Length: 118
Ligand code: 5GP
Ligand code: ZN
Image (cartoon, rainbow, N blue to C red; front, side):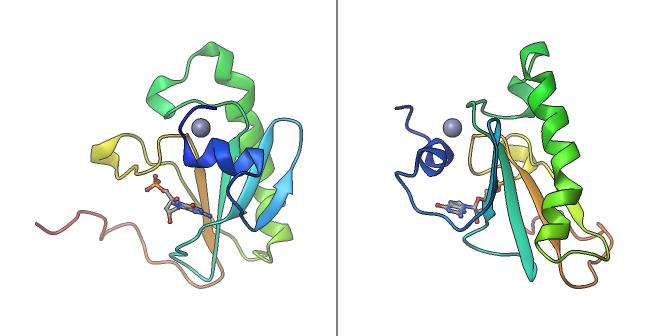
């Protein structure tokens, strides 16, 4: 198995709090939530980041975005949510298996405060 935390979560080798699974996607609670509800949606097939995607990933990318509102609603986010995909080190990506963050459960700030301090 590829040495990837999220591939291991999909395989059940690392436990997670699963919120959704189908043939192509897996969604689970973030271990360090940045909002009252913080879920990660990942494709089961490993791809490191958005920058590594090609046409073969088109369907999984679409599936992630189409699943997001349903997974958010099932997680109690009836009043809206934020979707974030960090890409690459400069984009704040820490786990290199593409994932969409679904954040909500409180009023989220506008995205004016996202540059890391030195
Ligand atoms: P990134 O910064 O790559 O966009 O986001 C990675 C996210 O994965 C972080 O929010 C981090 O808390 C979460 N994370 C890292 N390791 C684990 C883990 O083992 N289990 C779960 N559930 N989340 C993880
Ligand atoms: Zn992976």
